[in-house]
Image 1 (tube, rainbow, N blue to C red):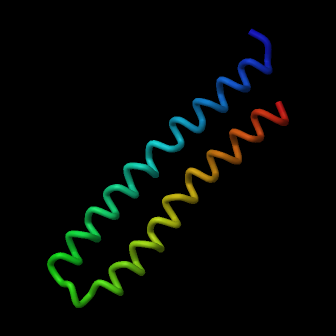
Image 2 (cartoon, rainbow, N blue to C red):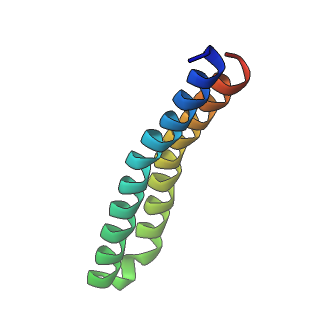
Length: 76
């Protein structure tokens, strides 16, 4: 295989594997936040704020994978 084909394959694997972790993390985070809001509705504002901050950090990991994939595609 030529290097460009290998770079495309690596970019696809990078995005595929790099999105699994954040997807699981965001699912768990939102599920636990909803459980917390169901138990204590008066704390919904604080729980939602913490949830959105956690989602942003988890989503940043998949954005790093996207940057690496773009580097593999356009630089290699």
